[in-house]
Image (cartoon, rainbow, N blue to C red; front, side):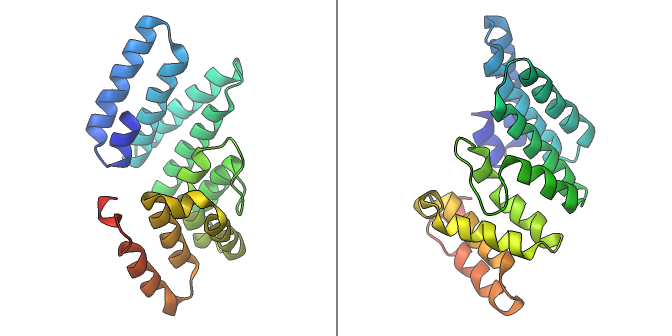
Length: 186
């Protein structure tokens, strides 16, 4: 629920829901479940430009998983750090964080957050003149059934295609992306 609220821009609700989940998880002894709330709080902090909190929470995720081997939490930390880097305009650092999740042009199996950071990875690649890597990632999106079968991800793939297009083509591709059925929901 907290991540849905985050994705929909309802960040205060995301924070409240995350904190509630953390509290319940701690009270009931479900420590792994609380990590989802920590992740969401970190995402909100990164999105709001609170880099110190975002990085501290990302470090908490990594520290917690180091003793338990839950690799997905490390990917979550890379996403948070990458978003914080994007927020302060450090596209090279953001790119390095995102490719730790999944290299440009690939969507590694069992790495669901790779889909979530696809747009951010392409943007960071384009802004650091890694045009071949950005184009490879767009090509991988075009091949992945998930990106054509779900409206949100189809919108992301179309937007990414516009980012790597020539200046003359980009505007039309952005317009097509926004004209996709369901685009107004995202």
